[in-house]
Length: 366
Image (cartoon, rainbow, N blue to C red; front, side, top):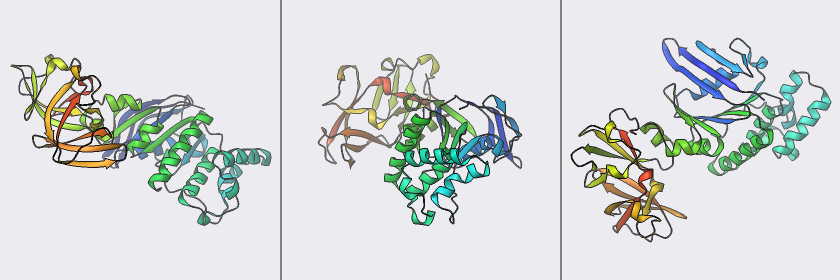
């Protein structure tokens, strides 16, 4: 096991800077997820850790030693790729053991590790099959087995579930989490899927345009995003951002026909606001409550009744859409709210869950 440190890491292609001097410390045994939209630099960062991409500046340390100039096979890392990268002419067993055989490990050690990995990934009955005879999920388990069979310091995962269907992705997320709990080894996992990031990571690193926007526990990032990008990227459905203006004369944040008293927002200080400043009020759909069932209604901010424009049933929950001015807003309510499109709906929000962002730069206002 080993910790990984990235110090002022930079990657350029010609004159274009893809990774812009990022710093990251992954602790020994930690599961860290790099998440962000396509092209943000997360896979490039992972490939630099693996040694598959050269770096232009900065330092990569694994287990306390700089590995900038080490070839990939000397870094004692194992990597699982998006496209499986299995040898079609080899059996499952031979695919899993390929790296160990190249390392000239003894047969006794190979047999022992193969048994452990095959049991862990439920591949015992598939060892003599070829990749063409396997489903997508089975092939991905084989690719994971090829990495896990090695006694590596760090395991790297580059969007390993993106080619699987939704049901299988859910199953494999559970399997990967279980494997990490058993191995207690350092995992660095890249994905563009914020559900994977939230469910798998001890810590989540949100990247955008070659930089780290925020890092923290999944719940901290969900509840306390530092800017509008993180607020809308993390969470499904994404956070509502309602255009607003601060009115200094009466201490109100005004959103079309709604007024939100600043006194309800102890986390936002008027000293950090200017009169007529353009803002966004951020409220996650999950934090709206039907006034008939709100748990602490007296302390909540209560909205005047809104007209329901659309209802999307989701089983136990339903997404209810309405408007505040020109802004389309979503609330997620449970089965107790028996509603129809066109009905009037009274909503309330715990003011501790209301965030305020500067509309010009997107940063959170505290």
